[in-house]
Image 1 (tube, helix red, strand yellow):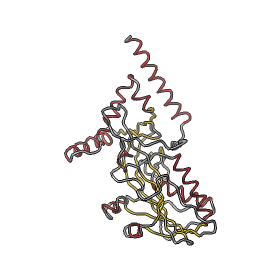
Image 2 (cartoon, one colour; image 1 turned 135 degrees about the vertical axis):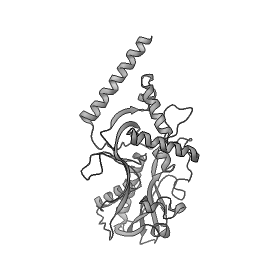
Image 3 (cartoon, one colour; image 1 turned 90 degrees about the vertical axis):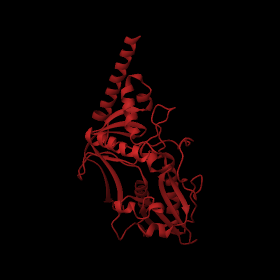
Image 4 (cartoon, helix red, strand yellow; image 1 turned 60 degrees about the vertical axis):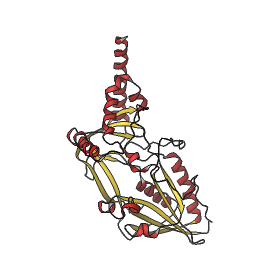
Length: 330
């Protein structure tokens, strides 16, 4: 029996090695394409939000219909993350949240459209380690939120509220249909962008999928529909980069956490994420900070969860960096 298990384990490891080499050395494209889904899955009741998602928006994500003859002003919106709680604090570190505003000339009604985490940023960046589930448990869905009104003070006091264009009602309705399709198929939030180094010609291994990426996609769609967008100021956006050598593909939950032969890898991934667990005491958080430094900087190791699959990143200096870089309007 022991011999059989060893043979099966060896074959599994060999298979995973072949798959990894095929993906990375043969057919793997960089950056890894973000995975789209046929539909958005139901939310697991284990995932709980500290602040309710889209509390004043339509529960089913519907966007109002505009008359084709209407004229809709388009606004670029940006404010520090958690501005409602910390004011301008995170803005000093260029950690910004982005959205798009609209204003109907016929009705005078304003609207805000944004894309963000269902269960706050921490849950999208690191998983929960549950006693009843061996694999790390992720609450990483993100979605679009469309609601009536633009909170002028919220956006303008510490950020940006700028009119960047005008579209017709028909263009708005076409955009709304695209938003609902995009929202149904792009279901999870990804905090990290991963590059080989900070230089302009660096290889991009993985792209983030966050609020600013949704804004960029919306601007591009509006441009495709014939809109002319322009800004009087430089259009900068927040990026959180990890820097690493070429990533190694490891597998999905069932491949890693469902196979006894990969027990050591499974335990190492759980140990890595245990460092970043939520709801730690101050003393535990200080210990975890030192453990994270040891793993990421000294051992140069990071486990990334992307497209519901795990990758190993051989980390390189400067390891992690928050940037505030220009992305021109299309």
